[in-house]
Structure formats: C-alpha cells, structure tokens
Length: 317
Image 1 (cartoon, rainbow, N blue to C red):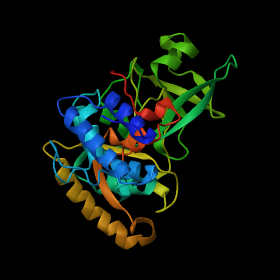
Image 2: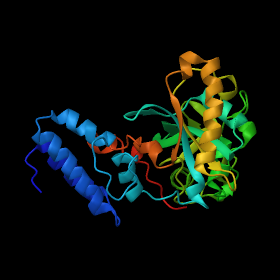
Image 3: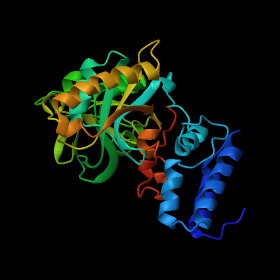
C-alpha cells in the first residue's frame, strides 16, 4: 500500500487500529482503494476524507450494497452493552443527512416515551461535568449525567446500596437527590455503607445520596454520578439542548418494526411542528452509534473527540 498523502496515511493507520474481525481485510481494502483513487484523481484531501466517511463510491465487498462503509466499520469492532440482553438496547435520534446526525430533544423524548409501544422502556440523559463539594469542602470534579429513572430500568443493574432514581424524582419541585457511582462513593465516603441519606453539594445545590451503583457501572457512557433529568413534561418543540435517547426493545419486536412505528409517530410531529421536525428523519441505531455519531461515525476517526469520556466506552458491571 502506498501512503504518500498525509490524509491517506493517517486514515489508514487509524483504521487498522480500530477494525477487527473476519471482515477487516475487506473493509480495509475498500478504505485504501477508494481513498487512494480519489486522491490520485486530484480530489482535495478534505473532500476525499468526507467521501470516505459517507461511504460513497465504495465497492460493496463483504457487506450489503446499501450499507455505508462507516456503518460497516462500526459493525466490525462494536460490542453490545455489557448489560443483560444489552443488544436489545438501541439509540433513537434524528438525522438530516448521511454526514449530519443529531441526537434527540426533551420534547421528542416526551412524545416517544408516551406513544411508542415497541419499547419496554425509553430513557434519556444529558451528560455533564459536576463539581462535587462534600462536608469537608474539598472540591472534586466528576463526569456525570442528568438522567431519567427509566435509564436504570433499561440497564437492569441493581444498586449496590440504596435505590436508583425513581420516576417521582423527575418531578419539578421534588427533593434534589443523586445516585453515586462506586468511585465517588469511595472518594467522598470511604466506602461507608451509611452514605445513603447523607448529602453532597453538587453544582451549587445540596443533594441527598439515595443510592450507590456497583463498581464498573457506567451509563450512558462513562459517568460517575446521576441526577434526575427534569422538564420533559413541559418541553417545547425545537427548544432545549440535545440529549441522548435510547430504549430497550420490547420482547419479540425487531428494530425494523420499531422504526416503522417511530416513523409513523414522527409524521405526526412533522405535521404539528414543521419548523422543529420538518427537516429531519427519525432513526433507530445501535447504541454504540450515539457517542460516535454513526452512520457518519467515521467523523470520530477524522476528528477524535477532545474528551476521553466522549468515546463511549463502557466498563462491565
């Protein structure tokens, strides 16, 4: 393989680190051939990289002809969530083009949660950094999430101590509570079983610890503590931050069946809120696509995230 162009060389090296499995030689061959051909024909490096990421003009070798190369790459090295029947947990989101995919909104989550019968549970999370101040005043930053109680039911991992978040914790005006991961429990309470019921100041507000999760639990990506996600009941279409939305498929329901139902619900949203939903289409994707953005997931390869937490690794519970 000749890698005289810096873009070609970089993409080839990264791809060889990421792509594993029996299909790897075919995927890597397609990558090299397509990118080299475009560069040899004088295409600008940025455009050749973009065409590579979208999977256009790539020979369908050992994959479905309609499957973008980026999707195929992710299929080769992804693994299901390390939870009970983790392969049944999928992402729900919106997409504008093959190269631009966005996550959902609180409004979409509220509608999907109430209307979709294809899912046993639907959850959502807004990932964030928190400064935690214990009683001794030693400030410690932790990566965490505002998360729905349904997320814990989706994960099916029981707390080590206390309880997970509950639906009533999400109500506006409910007491401020937090579920801790194993590490902050060790750091702030030295593994004291009596930590449940004590308080920590998080993001300027005192929160009562209601539960502690077992060592290694990370959800939705690489978080250490969880605070109730509130406001979905009053969310307006087209407003608010993007959030992760995911669900556990109901027994016997396939991804295709769930997508058909989601598409029907989305048609109603498009009609009712054309400014917010008119230019997007719904998608059901493998959970691993949420952190990397697939099917445009090779944007992760072209521009690696600045935060290691954004890579979406999950430690086994």
